[in-house]
Image (cartoon, rainbow, N blue to C red; front, side, top):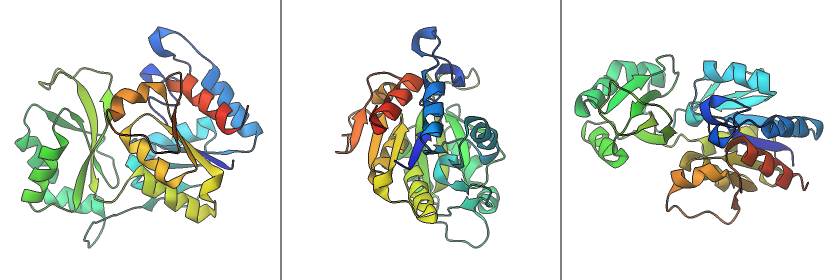
Length: 260
């Protein structure tokens, strides 16, 4: 095994975004130990996240990840190279971020779904991030109706927080980005750039966006806490569910892929 792609929040990191937080309020060092095991086995670690490039850069440095893909795959950083942006179905010209800012599409969604959405992370490079609770199908229909059929509205999972500013029973993270952009496309691009065969890769995650990566790696591990997120979506033949959640599940996946 040459490369392990892993989601960050909810997978490698436990509740509250801590490497040492276990489910139920306890502590664990298993994820940290698994990272050391990967390093000793000379397995390349690549982070994949909905976070911005700026937010992911420091995490990658601390965790020893050589490369990372941010904004749900819209931005890929390989080693010390310049960031690569995936513009997907963006018709151009120019950069996606500039086009989104000029279009007013974020404001359109906020007006269409008042009290249910709010923007976050204004320093994104390709996507626009939102939090709240909406019907994704309804949002995409609104985008198409307004002439933004080249955009996709992606659900990136539940956030363990409350937002008094919104009238919603739970809070989820969303990304508005060009259609065709995903973690899976970024993982495939990384493999191609590094010349790594699919058979030499594995991935770990906790969401539907992560599960799509199973199509481009040899083995995929869904940490136990991700079962709720994928709902009735069937697992592909090369996907496995760990017995334990969060970082403990990540450690379980590392042991399995290394045959330990």
